[in-house]
Length: 264
Image (tube, rainbow, N blue to C red; front, side):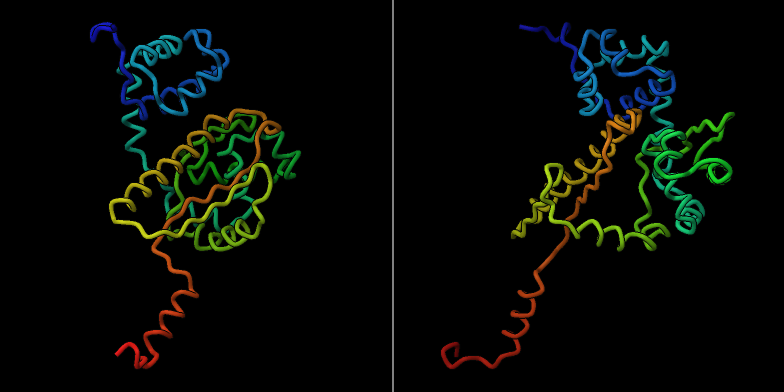
C-alpha cells in the first residue's frame, strides 16, 4: 500500500502544462527528446500534455530539463492566464479586410513553415515580406531576421463572437462546412434532439466546452509537425434551444384551429 508521504498526486496542471509546452517550443526540445529524460515513451508524453495529468514530480523533471525553476514557470503561467484570449477589434478588422493577410496569419498559427506557405499557397517574395510586416505592425507576430516569425498571441485565441472576422466569414464557413455527406473515414456527424433538464443542459455544455478546449490543445501539440503529417480539419461544437421548423409549424396550426367537438 502506497503511503501518503511517498505518493505524488497529479498537480492541478493546465496553466503549468501550457507554460511547459511554450518553454519546450522556445528551447526547441521535442517530445521525442523529452521522453527518455522522463523515462516514458513519446506517445506517453503526448498523452500527458494532452490530458494535463502530470504529477508534481514530472513537472519538476521537465523544469530540470529546461533549466528553469518551478517558481519561474508558475510566474509565466500566471502572466499568460491574464493575457487576453481575444484579438483587438483593430487586429480583427485588419484581418477581415485582407483575405491573404488572414490566410497567412491562420497558417502561421497552425505551425506552417514559410517554405511550405510558398509551395502550397504561393505566398513568397515581396508579397510575403509585406504581409509579414503588416502582421508585425498589428502586433500579431514578431518579425525576426531572415523572415523568422514569433507569434505574439496565443494559438488558441478566440475570434470575437460578433467581431469583424465572424461577421464577414462566419455564415459562409458554416454553410460550406455543413454541405457535405460526412461519409469519409475522418468524418463524423451526429445530431441528437432530446428533451433535457436544466441540470443536464449544463452538463452537456461543460463537456462541449472541454471538447473544444481539447481540440485547441491537440492542435497546439501538433503545430510543430511537418505539413505532410497534418490534415486541415473542421470541428463544429454547438448546442442551443431548438425545435424543428416542421414541428413549430404544426404546433402553430394546431393552436389556430377551432376546437374539435370531441375536445370540448
